[in-house]
Length: 145
Image (cartoon, rainbow, N blue to C red; front, side, top):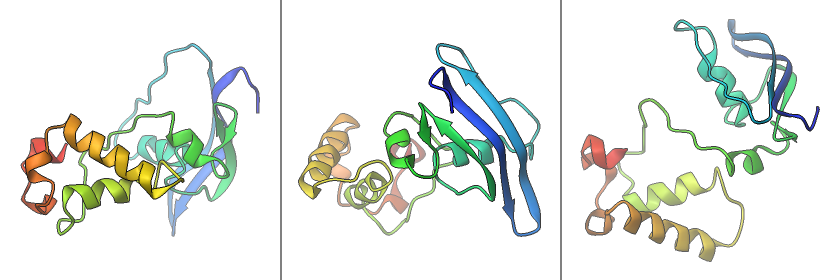
């Protein structure tokens, strides 16, 4: 995969059982360019993004982001990309602190003390200090976001 491309895929395919969610996607996005996914519902946009971020594994094909393999180096990739799902879903019985700890495992592999420092910083940043011990199932839509 070339160092001149921020995203590059070859034959990237994802099946969920008998459902073909992404069919042999070949994609090249040069560095310093603007790029967006457009298409009708069911076109494979979200599936492609999840594959690029390593949130799901391809059935076949391969890809890279920032020159890093999407399967082997997905944690390093996710450290560099912001991704907000359309409708966030959390374990309703977990509190804010537990939810952030859980999410941190997708982006960071390191000492627990560093995770705790980051969790504390995020709780303060979004103003949830007084709600940190409440289950997120009772949060408003804005608090969830």
